[in-house]
Image (cartoon, rainbow, N blue to C red; front, side, top):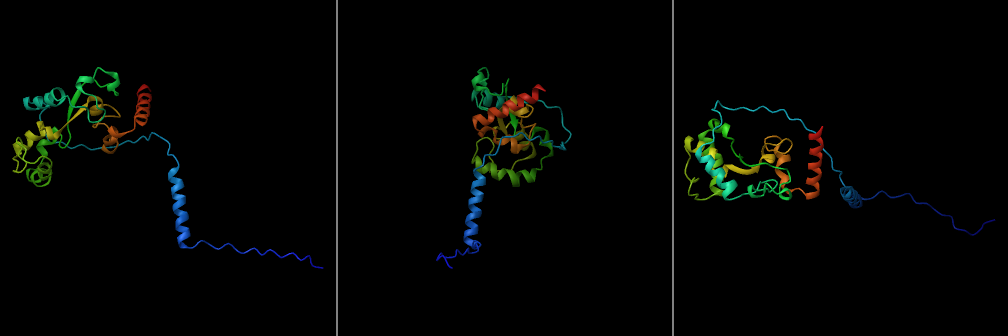
Length: 209
């Protein structure tokens, strides 16, 4: 005897075609990207060889002292990273890394490397970029070739080779450009306030150990 009910036929699932598969993969990637990446500290030890030519002990020339005085005090330029100025060093709300003084960093060519710079390479590689950034500069005249002495002078005290930094972001452990790799140091002035505060708290923990 039959019941009159229709038999249910289960059809096999059809595998997605190429377009459907790509859409699904994109959705999966989007969902994965939405997942928050947790903040973490990564310890990284760098072994570095530093090569310097024979040179005298560092002596601040009158020209360097004049440039330093102009940039840090007369112009009162802020630290490139944290924004503290000579005029705000005593204000804790504007001095997040507790800097004690403003300094100037030779950021393109270090002073100790001045005697290792090749005149032809400076003129053919670096000088055109400087001419583009500072066209017809009345002091350095980048349109004309530099002599070795002019290169040394430029390295020592050109405002185009100097960055204003506070001592913490210049030489400080975990923070200074002389202490950490450039990819970590460079974007520190662009970090969100909450992220920068978290980083400072992690540094404080390390220094208290």
